Image (cartoon, rainbow, N blue to C red; front, side, top):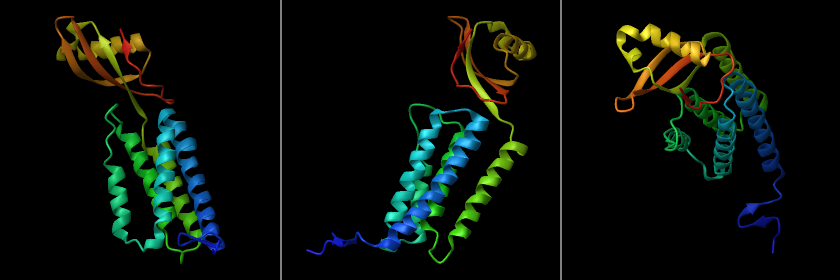
Length: 212
C-alpha cells in the first residue's frame, strides 16, 4: 500500500501544507485584528467574537480544501450568499454585527481562494487594506450607537408633545446619553410601555433590559 497516497490525497505533499499554513496564519491574524482589536474595542460585545472567529475559520477551511475540485467564481459567491442570509432566530442581530459577519466571510474567501499566482505579499496587503479601512471608518466616520430596551411606567410621557420630557427622564434614570427612542409596545392594562432607547457611548455595554 502506498502510504503517501491515502484515499487519493497526497498526505506528504509539502507544498500543500506550506500554502495552507501561510494562508491560514494570514487569515487568523487578520480576523483577530478585525474582531478583537477593532470590533471589541469599539463595541464591547464579547458574545459575538466566537461567531466571527468560528464562521471565518469554517469558511476558510471549506473553500481552501475544495480548491482541488476546480471551483468556479460562482461557488465563492454561492458560499458567500448562503452564510450572508443566515438568520439567528433567538435574538435580533444588530446591523453592525451583521456587517462584521459579512467581513468575516469576505476575509476567509479572499485568503482561501486568492489565486496562487498572486504572492503572499499581495495577500497581506489586501488584508491590510481591509483592516485599515475598517479602523478608519470606525474611528473617524462612525458613531457607535448603542441601544437598550426599557420598561417605562410614566405612560403620560409617551405622548408626542412630551417626548423631550421623556428623553430627559430616561437620561436621568439610566445615566446614558440618550438621543432618540422607539416605542415598541404600549400596555394600557399595566400602564407601562416597552421603549428602545438609542445612545452614544465610548464603550458599549451589554444589552440587557432596564426595568424601571
